[in-house]
Length: 100
Image (cartoon, rainbow, N blue to C red; front, side, top):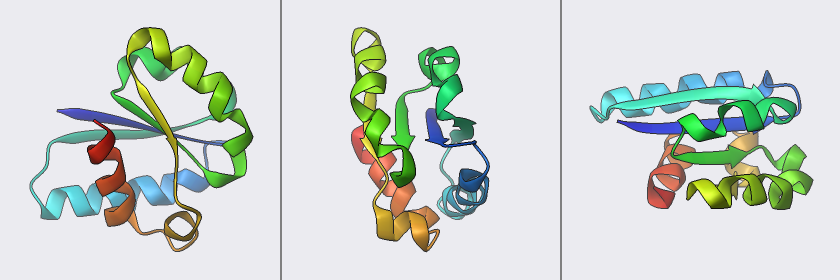
């Protein structure tokens, strides 16, 4: 199972995206776990996931989170702004899986 963590300012705007990503994974019969948290909580969850995707609005946190992720061999990336804004769950899922 691939585990994907999404982070945004409050953990709410990514909830819709999580649903869209699950829909895409289900249609492809992929076994994934996807959750969303606020960027302030990421250090409590990062160890449990394979990859961390940041919402474009918290892009400024990428270096800090990458430093937390490096010793755990976890990848961190910012979600494409267009994919995030249009809630393209399939595209965001593809980018997460490519990082894993």
